Image (cartoon, rainbow, N blue to C red):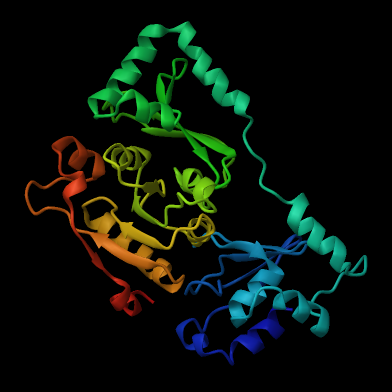
Length: 336
């Protein structure tokens, strides 16, 4: 199957940019490993499941999909053409049963959804306030010291886990389901891990705050332009000054996150990761992904003075809603 797909891929114009794609094949019991066709690499990190519906996953760039979607992406085909190729070329072979296309589609749609975290988990954390009011107040006071009012904290469901002495940031999918809970130590103590994630380990499609925009995408109040930042506190800082924002929970934007952003009706993004070398590289990477996805991409200009590192510092200094942007679509080819 992979050999046939690679043969077709060699005739694509994109082959020159990633000639190692689908090479270095290594078969295991459940997975076929090869070099990723989505990003350039020389060591196989891309896995194709040998079990229907044949999930595909890159452990480096975060690509997720099924084999029919992969065929469409590799060959630049329209949606639905991948299944046709599977059937017409007999690419899929089953040792123990014939290939059932109806079951394949139903499995892909229904049986392999990523499970959600029960809302009761979040409610139990909120209820922990009763066990230690002092810890709860210290956590909320810390957030207020960073400039957040009660309305912002309530909007984003920020609460305090008095058992672990952490501030809680619920992380939801685009459709609003609870995927995992991010916890941050109260205060500025940097000893040990600052953040703890509890819940499902699959996070590369999660964009903090995106579910608010997804609810509006079919209404007259649709918001098509957002500011993309690193952390939940950066996102909340922008919200409090009236700027629609989303957070990618880090400096690396993944392709699955780009897809979720598009599905939420977003067509324009202002990049504003942290004001440091890593943030600058992250914005270069994000600009390339968003540009290729067809979105309007801008970068926010940090002020030369004072030197502030992120949205929350700019928010506290009163500069966050006074920044200019410049478009980077015209130089998108530099990132491809």
